Image (cartoon, rainbow over all chains, first blue to last red; front, side, top):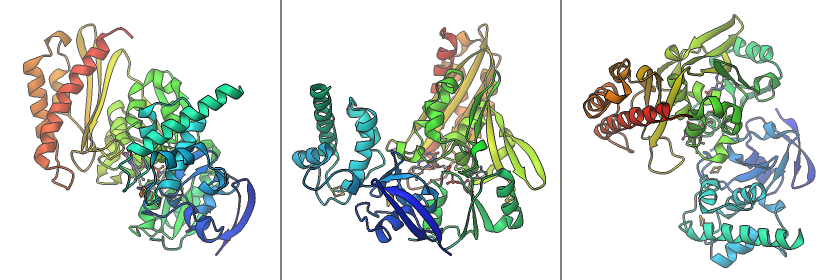
Length: 162
Length: 293
Ligand SMILES: Cc1cc2nc3c(=O)[nH]c(=O)nc-3n(C[C@H](O)[C@H](O)[C@H](O)COP(=O)(O)OP(=O)(O)OC[C@H]3O[C@@H](n4cnc5c(N)ncnc54)[C@H](O)[C@@H]3O)c2cc1C
Ligand code: FES
Ligand code: FES
């Protein structure tokens, strides 16, 4: 039996009918058509499915879709337009923090949550914030450097405008 | 993998949740933060007919700091508990232990009570509960009862809870007097479950140890109190607790754990680490108890 789910996804009010056993990841990808969040393990281990629910990063594979009723969800698709990447995305490109790219949407979501809350973060804080994101390609160093670079840029920008 | 279908109940009250559990105790599961249960469902290691979601029961979301205990509701997320300065000021070991529970993303969803109910022997919160002492409050259609920390953990992932019971809150006792604490765990990577860990509280009256609680986790089917080591140092003068006494406490701890070999470490290694961590826990707790706050 299906139940109505009403959520705000990347700023858009969205209504779908879903069965209770479906995960948020599953519904985002298959019913709402947002395939940015990836299924790496479905076991809450890898972070490839990371999205923000009410601004906090969570693994969408271990979140029942119906539990998000009434909440605000942000996926990688809601972070930027392809023509104008977010500072984190730009920095990942510049630092070489993307190889196969499977982990990247999840990494960007965790990093965004960190930088939104704490733009003056240091390397230890970046490593802790990305603790739930596995990357099998890059060896992490370039990703960490990219997030620190994005933090610097965001701070510079805040400094010049404010 | 995808979980098999189940009936989902987003309960608004404790009575509603308890009613569903009571109608089908063996076919129902309580869903808290889902950070252990949903992966278990995805892997089809469990296939309940009814999922009783307690996340929308508002009365379960609380932290109450009282003079002699702290009460944490079953809906309260780990990250909220971790950030509570009021709780931190009376039980600093909790924040330190929580920082080792998975990753921040896990703690954004997971609950303290859910972790205690799940009763993973290598988990941090069950060990903290056993060390600080306290009780859980369990509700069922038959009424309400409390279960003390010493009676709660029975075996691997098994507690004294009946299948028709819901824990509504856990109480952690606040130690009296000058108390020092220690927390440490050995894991290959930060965020992993511990290979072995220790939680300790040591209280002093004057220069004498009035109470000692030492728990090893990851060293058996449940978190284990190191009662022989505790007894060795209780009543001793802090200034006398040195080489020989510490050595004996370590030997007692190594003998008291019941570890098994697994892919993470051998039983021998775990026994060795249990002694080492116990010795360190006593020394550092005494230092903290002795130094003025
Ligand atoms: C990648 C990853 C790493 C992790 N690392 C760690 C770690 O290092 N240390 C650690 O301790 N934990 C770790 N966890 C587990 C995490 O802490 C869980 O949040 C916790 O074990 C369970 O809490 P929960 O609220 O998510 O409960 P759930 O997953 O919802 O429930 C767990 C179990 O407890 C029962 N239950 C929950 N609440 C109640 C209640 N109120 N009354 C009766 N029964 C109840 C459920 O029925 C279920 O059987 C990790 C999880 C993941 C996914
Ligand atoms: S798919 Fe969700 S954590 Fe791996
Ligand atoms: S770039 Fe391939 S997994 Fe991270």
